[in-house]
Length: 446
Image (cartoon, rainbow, N blue to C red; front, side, top):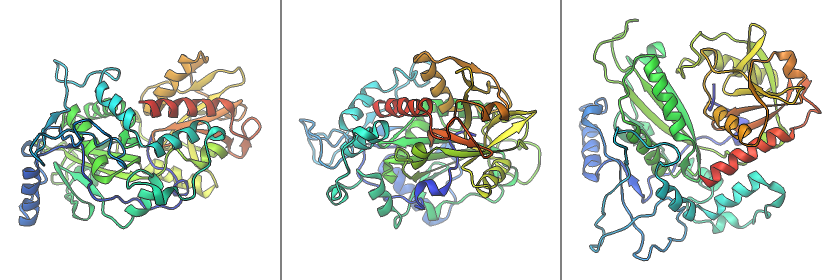
């Protein structure tokens, strides 16, 4: 499945953890509401299980000077305006909707805001983008860079600092320290894995391809008959607020929605409120050693259920497969059914076959509709590559010119070995490298 867990070796052993909330551009509730929620938690009256009474409106504050000078050290994602009275904040409505109450499409959504973000993106992050796209053209890293870097501008520096800090997580309408986050033992996800989830990458403090992930989330919820507890705009705001509060420059946002809390019974309970949980993980995504070395893959039988198109929280088969891959000295396991590859435990499988055709399995109940998969297919068609959504066997994979995998947090990684057999010359191929470059380049510009 796409965009989920990766091996801890990729992140240099860093443990997830986040910094406390900085000054910010957006918040989801008025400060008085947050104070009320803190008081509720202190009283112990429960109040984190009712979305109807905790719905929020996406607003923002602008703290720029009148001439809109950029504040040194700001990552550029906290631009705002103040009124004439010192400290008085003017709310700006970022929850722009069309007449149907939905977010505009990818091309029109928040274009002014995206342009402002591009103007103020951290210079250090731009440098990391250059290194990721054209490592040979990037200047050498200044050894004194971290001592000069303003707070929140360097991912590795921030992640190191954040290990001693507590993350803020989202639970059923409240943003709380992770140590205070609580879910009922009777939650259906705990008892039956009765829920769905999404993992969205973050670059330069911005969620990547978020609308695609929310489209897939809507579909998964519909397939298991859970009514979405939050609107599209509220989910966008939730992601942005978590990123802001935790000062995530690079990493992921994990979002899970379950059927809610009820006494244990296989039947769907009536009138339960869905549980919504979200948290962030800061970790480097652009600077990935596997993008340079390539990864090894092993094949395993596909033991999953027959509705793999639903991004269910039931991941035991994938967890077992990932552990088997590690035991056999590989990064990923490709699952095989009826003689052909379905997908990886946390990725989509691609090959460039002997005829030079880019192939991946077509969509259906057998695989997850990967968001990064969709982006790569679009890029492939844009540059004129021959593409076929057609299954391939393990033997075809071993004979391929090239192979690679895609995932939300890994982007595109070249596969250099399948079951001990080198792919091509056993080194990362140019096609995989080009798709990673194109994907990262597009993400850097967005």
